[in-house]
Length: 595
Ligand SMILES: [Zn+2]
Image 1 (spheres, rainbow, N blue to C red):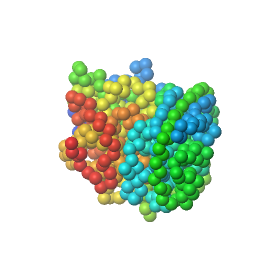
Image 2 (cartoon, protein in one colour):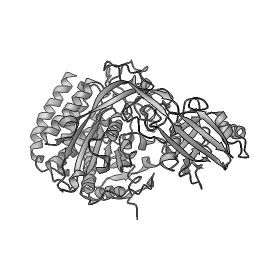
Image 3 (cartoon, protein in one colour):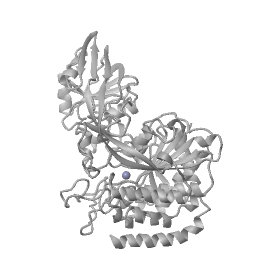
Image 4 (cartoon, helix red, strand yellow):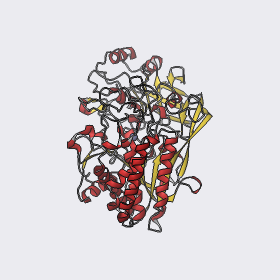
């Protein structure tokens, strides 16, 4: 550990002397592989113990970033004139008074939370949501797999209902797709609420936008087993305890405002569905039998079925744990536009060190097959006694990438708008830092034109040499077509354009990456985002994700792309138009989107 630290210090001294030339020039040219390597050699060193939230290692990383911001004269944008925004992670107890009232042909029945229907522990603020009921079979839209329960349906403004675990033809990664049904119904198809089955294992259960535990972050789950059914606090146990707080306190854990109105995502039992179908001319028992055997489910029109959802939960905060985002701003040059912002983000936390011997551990210490569809590959063999998840790629690469972008702006030409940099804490524990920032922003969210997020940009997907010039983009087209096109233009303007791959932007992609990193916290607030990643590899969430494996020229290249896109957005005289047309670029797609 010590020798590694000394190496980092030596590298720092060398790079400092090299850095003098770049200093003062700023701009894209100041983003260099040598400097990125210098910074990452510290950020991903054993000294930082894997940068787990609530640990000293994360604190060291925060100070390291802040010290550099100060050196470059980046303005502090955290609490009380500091570079730090304190993130409050609350354990919350809930008193459930919510209910669902169904009217079928004039006959009304009310189901209380816990009696036939189940609301997520964090159901959000009090509200009443009503709509006509629309049955969408298995509730899946996977055209590439020949499954499209939404074909020919307009569920906008309606309450969507679905059953079962999908047909026999479900593609691999089905659990995530099932878990995403409610969210997709609301976000992609504009339903006002979603009601699904209560299946053992809890697919989609508790998947309210406000429950970190329900969000399928890669986090501490090496397997895609849904964790939504367990209380949020149960998951916090993986990351907590050292702060002196009891990680299991509370029905759920959240960093978000408790009065946020969250579109209801509810599960329901047989009695509820029986009543829903009571006048449909199709018995629920028959539909259920077909769902149980994963056969095709007939289309059923639910005429004259209306649903009113009364979200009514009372919350009591029973404990608070603290972590920190690191935040800085470089002010824009235009007197009018400088109170508007382009945000750049990465998470600087990771999953810490292994607390159990190999083979017994949580979070990817099991070895064996490589994750992320790297077919035929095995986990790399760790050095004897190595228990530290260095997170060089995840997300050390993004951490230093955003540092380089901050430096490029701070020491180079200033765009019209201001640019804000956020190093998020606790992403691995459920997007804690970004969710907090999105609910308690340091600048008004309506002044934010776009957010550009980086998570894992230092490798080739599955270590394939053919990936050397590829970066994957997710979400660029979903909220703003214009933002998508600006990024394509920025890439074309690079000395050597990269291959922009949209495979993970496909809503049917089993990894559901759009919802899995910090950009999603901002997208949920309607802010156009782009997520940049180079994809998974055999060292993902493993002690072998180390600095020696990082492709620093590629990292610099992608940081330059993000910087260049940021410059374009920051110099635009308007915000990228929010046309909310959803994902259009998917696997095999490329280029701009025509008007
Ligand atoms: Zn990450």
